[in-house]
Image 1 (cartoon, rainbow, N blue to C red):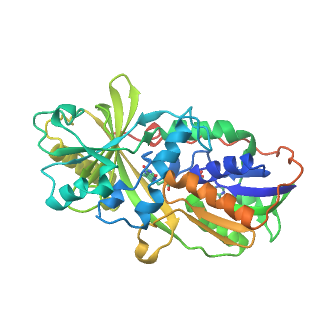
Image 2 (image 1 turned 90 degrees about the horizontal axis):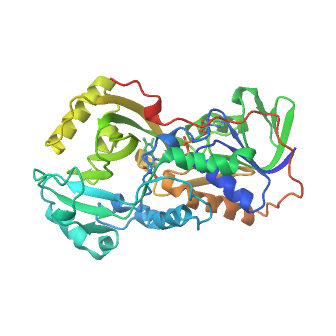
Image 3 (image 1 turned 180 degrees about the vertical axis):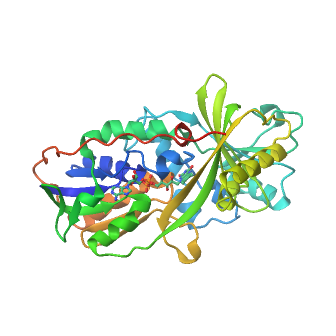
Length: 384
Ligand SMILES: Cc1cc2nc3c(=O)[nH]c(=O)nc-3n(C[C@H](O)[C@H](O)[C@H](O)COP(=O)(O)OP(=O)(O)OC[C@H]3O[C@@H](n4cnc5c(N)ncnc54)[C@H](O)[C@@H]3O)c2cc1C
C-alpha cells in the first residue's frame, strides 16, 4: 500500500497532525499500540498555557514567546473557527487563577503590574473571589489568567470522532521495518514519510529504523487525585520559586462531587514518595494552603507518570515543541498539549518544503482493529 504519511501514536500530537494532514489532502493513516487519547494527553491537566507560568521568571524567554499564541488558537478551534473543529469539546473553565497564600512579594507584584503581564493577568477585587477563595479566612491575593482548561476526555473523543476511520490498532511486536516499508502481518505499507508521535514509545520505535537519535528525556511526576464534595478550582498557588507550588484542576463527576487533580511542585518533588506518603503530603499541603476547608472523608489516589520530551542539556523543559527528521522519518514530542497546533503546522511545512506530493489514490481500509479510547486517570485509580 502506498501512503503519504504514516503516523505512530494516537495522543494529541499524532491525532492533531493526522487531521491537519488529511485536511491538506495527504493520504495519512495512524497506528496506535494501545488506546487513542494517549498516555500523557488524556492524563494532562488540560491547561492551554499562554506562558504566564513561565513569565513568572520575570523575562520574556523563548518559552513565553512560542506559547503566547496558543490560547487564542485553541479558543478559535473551540468556537468551531479554527483549523480543527473543537466545538464539541467541553471547556472546564475559560480561565485559571493564580493565588498566593500571603501578600505577594514585591518583585512579583511589580511583575504583575508590568506591561508584559497586564494583558495576561487581571488582579481581582475581594468581592469577585470565587470559592474557595471567597472565605474571610483567605488572606492572599488572587489573579485571573486568560488560559482555558479543557476536559481532556472530550478533547480526545472529539479528535477520535473526526479521525477514527484513519486510525488502527496494531501490535508493535508484529511489525517489521525496512528502509522503505513497514510490514504488519500480510500488510506492506510504503509511506513517503513516517512520523513517530508515540510519546515515550518513540524511544523503542526509533531503533526499529536503526536510529538512536533524537534522544528523549523523561521528567517524572507523581500526581494526586482527591475526590469528594469539592468546589471547582482551576488555580496555581505561587510559592517561593517560579514553579507553582501547587496546581489544582477539577473534574466534575456528579452533582457536587468532583475530583481535584493536583500537580505543580507537589507532583515534581513527590516522585520518590510512595503513594501513601504522597497522599499525606498532598493533604498537609491543602490543609496549610486552604485551612478553612475540610479535607477529611475524601477519597485519595495518586498517578505516577512521565513527561516524555526531546532531551535538553541538564534535562530542562524544552522551550518549544520538537520536530526532528532524518530522511523520510520524522520524530516529535510536543512538550505541551497546548503546542499541538504549532507542531502540526511544522509537520505540514516540512512536507511542503520537501515536496511530498499528495498521492492520487485513497488507500483501502486496513484489516486492523479500531483502537479503543483511553480512560481518564480517576476512572482507573485505586482510591483509598
Ligand atoms: C500529568 C501531566 C499533566 C500535564 N498537563 C499539561 C497541561 O495542563 N497542559 C499542557 O499543555 N501540557 C500538559 N502536559 C504535557 C502534555 O500532556 C504532553 O506534552 C502531551 O500530551 C504529549 O502528547 P503526545 O501525543 O506526544 O504523547 P501521549 O499522549 O503520551 O501519546 C502517545 C501515544 O503513543 C502511543 N504509543 C506508544 N508506543 C507506541 C508504539 N510503539 N506504536 C504506536 N503507538 C504507540 C501511546 O499508546 C499513546 O497513545 C502534562 C503532562 C502530564 C504527564
